[in-house]
Image 1: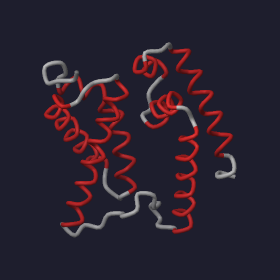
Image 2: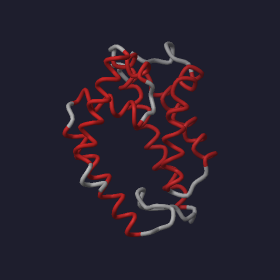
Image 3: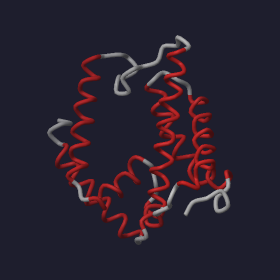
Image 4: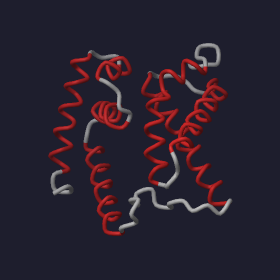
Length: 174
């Protein structure tokens, strides 16, 4: 079980800050918000995780990463609400590209729906491996550690899942 005693802020930062930072910067850039704000949100996320850690039951590194990502998403939503209340302009649609092109936004939305549908077609193990590799940017070594498998096994699961995704997504990206 993850608790204050077992994990320090320094441990959390060293392990998850780079992954959460990349994800936050990408999301905030879509809303027109700078990278320094992403670092602040990641810090707030990690502090909230430390404070609420006693209620989290650890079932592997992937579950911890998913929990941290959800906390970060909640922090991001709160930040966007605060900015709207202060009268700052932020993108309402997370899928809207920076240039505001509605055709590009529609295509992006359709592709995202196709990707989500293709992910649902994968088995849970493949979905987990793809999420760790693609969305969280983990190496095969990190995936193997998080899932309790071998590096070669992680590589094979990801490769097969990506081939399946590519086949299913080909029409949406043509």
